[in-house]
Every structure is written in structure tokens, then in C-alpha cells.
Image (cartoon, rainbow, N blue to C red):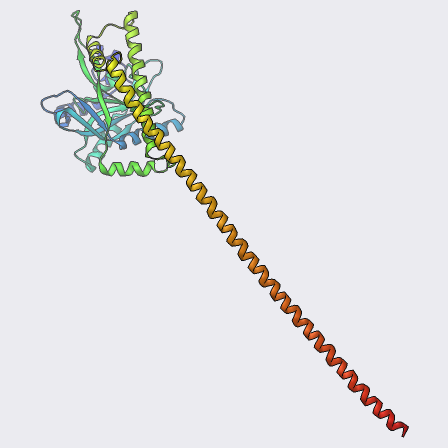
Length: 386
């Protein structure tokens, strides 16, 4: 039976107790720690992480893990291990992942549990399939950071000395990427207090190879709405981009308001970045710029207006042609029907005439027979008189 993890056990002199490791696993972890440098895939010059590229297979695996857990009635975040490799210039390529049994106490965030046996066995199986994929970090479904993420990250560092945390929001309803990447750093305090570990945000993006792009296109083929053309797709993407920009600006406004209210301390790095962002914005109060934007907008709207007029004229032209074609078809159908009626009348008239001729012929033959019989009867009567 595995014990649950409590960070308070660190002060008892048993460092593995804080990681939720059973006593019988200590010897194996000591051996693994000897090979921790070899298991790490971080560059030798220890370049900080500049960007994390998440592949679609990872997203599908995490969504499947979360869905299966929710269907079983457990509405908690899911945890797993990320596999991948490092590119040049500190770019981490996360190409695969697998789920890990995880549990935590909702009332006490310091109590959590990870199945080490499952993690090691699963990684050995993945290593047999693709030896280039190393453990590069871990993930959870968030949607935000938790208090025990630092402790879990220290555990994953047993297998990867520079572990990266990727939060994948499986229930993302807003626009933007559902991934947020972090890596652990030592925070130095100005007041001389001991350093503490914290997470620093890293840029993340969704990337795929050619084979993965083909698979994603096949998956989205049933979801994609074929009613809209390329213009509709472009407008939809622009609307989603504007929504994402609005949300980011809202976050910036909330942060600045909290700084003004004294809720958050001033972070000069963030202030400098905001200042650089505002310096890149155009001066909308400049009369020349406003006139240029108005002229360009009017030109674009004129083209749109002319295109709408041409489209309307073409639609009316097609409508008239369709109406004329239907009229000609109706006339042809009417003439053909009249011809058929005339032919039917001729046939019926001929049949009637034929019947009348046959009737007259029959009556004539009948009268001839009667006449012949009458003459033969008169001759016989004369003979009798004689």
C-alpha cells in the first residue's frame, strides 16, 4: 500500500516522504538518481526554455484521458507525463504523452499521490517503441496552477532534471490556445530570506508534422462546416483573433488595476513590456494618419460595394435566364401535348370511320342476303301455284 504525500514530512529527515515514495522504492530511486543526468534531455549549456511546441497527438491523448475520467464520475484534474526532445535554441518539442494515476485531497493540497511503478513501466514500454522520446516534463488539465505543482514537479525531476509543466485546458470555452507552459526557477528575495521555487511562464504553440496534419484534417472533416467558403473562414478567424485580443487586454487592465489598488506588487519587467507594447501602437490622434486610414477604408468598402452590385446583377441575370428557359420548356411541352392530342383525335377518328364502314358493310351484306332469300322464296311459291 502506497503512502500519500505530505510536504510536512520534509522536516523529518526523510526526503522521499515529501514525494509520496514508498520506503521499498527508495533504493530504486537512488539508482535512478545516479542516471538522472543521462535521462535528462536538456541541452548541456542549460539554455532556458524559450518555447514549447505541443503536438496534436498530445492534445488528443489528454482530452481522452480527461473524458474517460469524467465519464467514470471523477471530476478532478488529470496528470500525465510528457515525452519529446529538444531542438536547437531551447525549443522543446512535445510529441507524445501518457497518463499517470494521480489523486489528491481537495481539502488539503499538500496531500497527493502518484503511482511511480506505473510511470516507470509505461516509460520503459514507450522507450522500446521510440528511444528518441525522453521524459521532458508533465502535464495536468488545470485550468490553473495548483499549490502542490512545485512538489509534483520536484518528483518529475527525478526522471528529467529540467522538467517542464504544460497546463492543457480540456474544457476551454474561450478563444486562444488551450496550453500554458511553465518551468521551475529559483526565486531570490531581496530581504535575504531563503530562496523559493516558483514557475516562470514560457511561450507555447501548437505544431505538427506532415503526417499529423493529415490525421487532424481527417478528424476535422466531419466537424468542418462546408457551407462557408474561404472568405467566411477568414472572417471567422479574424473575429476569433479580435476576441482573443480583447481578453488579453482585459487581463492587462485587471492587472494594472490591482497594482493601483495595492493588491499586487509592481513588477517592473511587466511594466516595461507593456510600455514597449504601447509604443508600437499607432498615434490615432494624428490627422494625417486618420485621413490615410479613412481613405484606405473607403477604398476597400468601395470595392466591396461594387462587388456586391456585380453579384446582384449576375444573380438577376441568372434569374431572368432561368425564367426564360422555363417558359420555353413549358411552350415545348404544350406543343408536344397538343400534337399528342391531335394524333389521338386522328387515331380515334380513323377508328370511328373504320367501325362505321364495317357497320355499313355489314348492313349491306345483311340486306343483300335478305333480298336473295326473298327472291328464292317467291320462286318456290310460283311453283306451288302451278
